[in-house]
Image 1 (cartoon, rainbow, N blue to C red):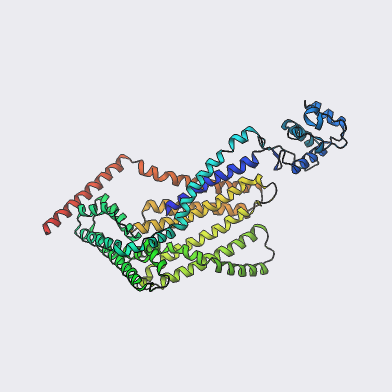
Image 2 (cartoon, one colour):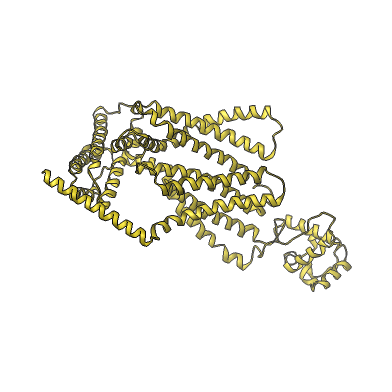
Length: 557
């Protein structure tokens, strides 16, 4: 799950580069005055009219003096190459080449700025190339390269995030008949044989079964999970007998799935509501009841770690409840928002935006939490272990509430830029900065959730390294970024203070994700001599332990 969060961040970076480059190359980089591009038609002509009027170029004498002072020729600027017959000196008197002549425009701006009224902002020619320039033609194709990178990442990521379960369910339905005919039996025979070998601790036999596993046609996700964990133990040359009981549970789960499908084939229809969807979900989902049963069997006892493991699997269903609660959240937020608006009618600007966004998102997450928690705590499987589920439930749900509050705050920054307004292209980097804050700060909380899920899904405890890198540092970064963002939005007025808070916000978010991208590489590859000695000692001690275990097993036989 942490890998998915990192992919989202990488996708954001590539998307910002593409959209930022495209918007920059098509707007900001083109010669413009106040976001009105050089030679853009009516708007450009109006801008030229304003410049000519402010510069005081009202007659032939004034124009001749202006042109001579700037080493410009009449033939280069005016229609027909002459000022004769011109009654009104405005943009209509200029030739196309003249009205887009950069030297002429710069000279006209300099002349106009001499006559500005008090407090009027000076005219500035921004950009560095014309829309029909050779440089623009050369730079345009790079957009296609960047958009290729965006879609190369977007398609697989979308499949993984939104359609992974759906694709797995579709695959199960497609192969249903062949599964019932022979694939189920083949897999059941495989797991029964594997169970015996695991109970004996027969390293070589289990290794051979793992090599043959890829040849199975029917491989439900909970069986994949077990085989992946067995592979890890095989590599470490660890104790395989710990999987004996869980392998038995996996076998019973596959048998139960087979019996349900067999009855459906005989009767012509399923005997449960949404039968097909349930079987497909049980086959391909990490959070299915069979996956949870496997992890419960693998756990030594019903302690707090088991509660964390169960919730780290059940939390995968949270997204389904988010989809289900979307419409009810809209209805409730509309009612609550209207009530708040009626009671507090003096809310304006960013405060109103925050109130509207928070009303919807908080309503949405609270409804989802209620539905998800009811599903878990009313489950008969957890009837006797509800007490160990309370702590992980509070932690996970609190993190989701923080996530949606962060999204609400991020929307305020994004909404500050009116992206449909004329000239708003000049604020492109302001808007992208707001989007970056929204995604990067929200991803910090998701990364904490992903750390908890990955850690307790695969292990019994949370290691110190994961505790620091996956929880403490992201929460510190989130706190700093959130406080600085709120201070920039609602703190003391003043451009300097707001700029400082915005800089703190950006440096914190970008700095953390850069650190995260290189920390694992450095930690895994920079090994001191002392650490190397400790690792060798650990390997030797483990090998000695396994050798003694094998001798005792042979002696018992």
